[in-house]
Image 1 (cartoon, rainbow, N blue to C red):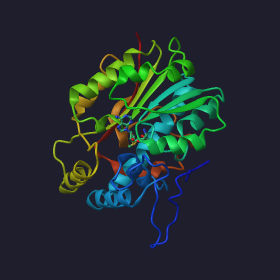
Image 2 (image 1 turned 90 degrees about the vertical axis):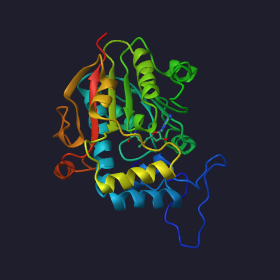
Image 3 (image 1 turned 45 degrees about the vertical axis):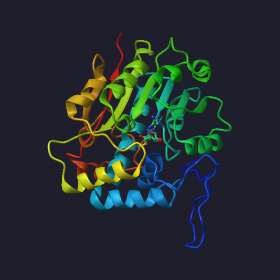
Image 4 (image 1 turned 180 degrees about the vertical axis):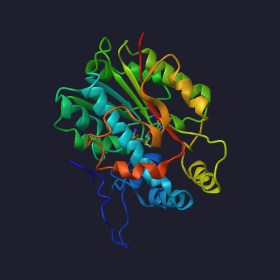
Length: 296
Ligand SMILES: C[S@@+](CC[C@H](N)C(=O)[O-])C[C@H]1O[C@@H](n2cnc3c(N)ncnc32)[C@H](O)[C@@H]1O
């Protein structure tokens, strides 16, 4: 499977009107999950998403490359966690739409019994994932909002699917910057992390507030903040580092996307999303990412 198109957006003639795949899905406004899908070259997006994404790209063309590099970070981290750290359980919050090399596919390439829970509050994710996962008993997808992390952790489906006495990788990849309030973002990350036993890991990426935003970056930020429901909240390097407080960083630790390594850069995982030769073009791009261990 590379990309799913359960919504039937596909290639449309100019005269065709796009229809949402379920009545509760509003396709009239841009949504961050579908804009990201567009950046990655997916088909699970609608006219409003494409227009907003194009506006963001016009102002900051590197956004497309950064989205692909973020995906490579996710793929390489999951591969490393399964292969090198022996992790067999993944809790992926803000999982996004099915795309190339989804978390369960990467983890199950190491161990077919690896278990994955995908959580996202975009109902479109549920529609697509239902199609994608129909035949995989080791992976479930829940439509839920991380803004109530306690309620999320109490969901019986999660407790039935994951064993919280064994290490779990918590993925918070490109999602916490959709929470405007700093204290709320920290409370979400802390509550989720505190539920994990020692030997677990946290995988995080987050757009950074640089010392000086370029005019293009300001425009892209304005596109997100005026057109999408969540907006995009940039945080400084120190504010992002706070998410890793008390954890033990692995690989290069929390790094800018162009500088990040974990030790498996030369295996081919993630190379179909972005080749390693393209990464230097993102030198200095303000997206931070890292993996860290929960030691107790
Ligand atoms: C940019 S995508 C990242 C997808 C994937 N984690 C990755 O990095 O490839 C962010 C995802 O977070 C989801 N999201 C945003 N706010 C959320 C919330 N409060 N609860 C759950 N998911 C959320 C969006 O719907 C979207 O699918």
